[in-house]
Length: 155
Image 1 (cartoon, rainbow, N blue to C red):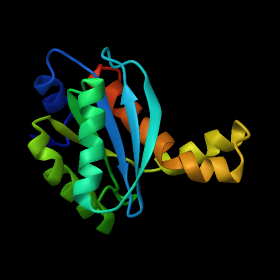
Image 2 (image 1 turned 45 degrees about the vertical axis):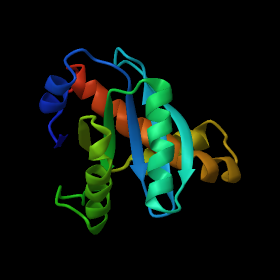
Image 3 (image 1 turned 180 degrees about the vertical axis):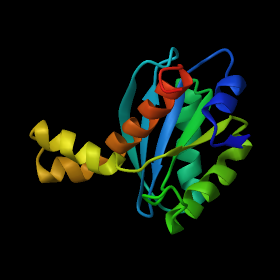
Image 4 (image 1 turned 60 degrees about the horizontal axis):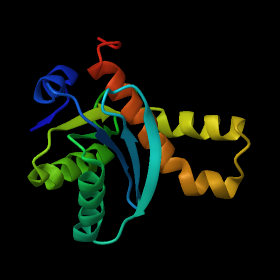
């Protein structure tokens, strides 16, 4: 199941469980994870993209290791809410991960990278550390927004 509705995702995850958040780009995939109660999203790793089969294998390994019950993928939208050219890439990622058998939520990711960078600057991350971790921190912001909605605080 692929959806853009937090309500549909919540129905599919009636028993809760850990989620993985993905910020997909052309060169990297930022990964974040949340607790089973959908309270806190934390930045995880950054996957350097190669062939999709290898990327998927890494995602599958994280899903298995952490007992993930659902996937949240950042959906890049234009400022007016319309889909951007990059939206197709996020949708393709969702379709390609669908065979993992987990519900997938496409979540608006507008401004997450900028917000992550601002937060990292405020925490005095060096440029090198920011470049290394920006995607996983953006994934954490995407996932936090989604779990806030799933938990009912953003309805």
